[in-house]
Length: 102
Image (cartoon, rainbow, N blue to C red):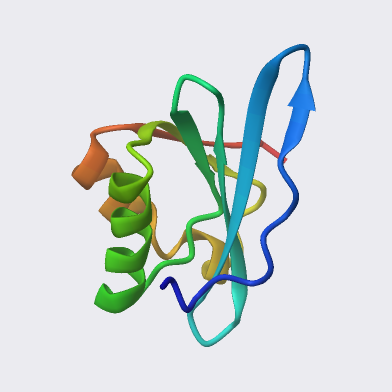
């Protein structure tokens, strides 16, 4: 259903709270984007590399289908493949993006 997925990372259960990590592979660089959600359906997007409209739609559709509530964009570093989707997600979900200062 979501062709950009690599195999799903197993869900981890800790202290009766479920954390789900979904991996997407986007753009010609084959960059990994991660969506991390908790039991309340709040989620963060890590390294959004969704550059093309089809990739953006895949991510938005997954978030909608799972009834997730994006809270934040987290950047692990500033390589181009990892930042291609920041502006789209900031505008679409009206959320903030953060990156380590190093």
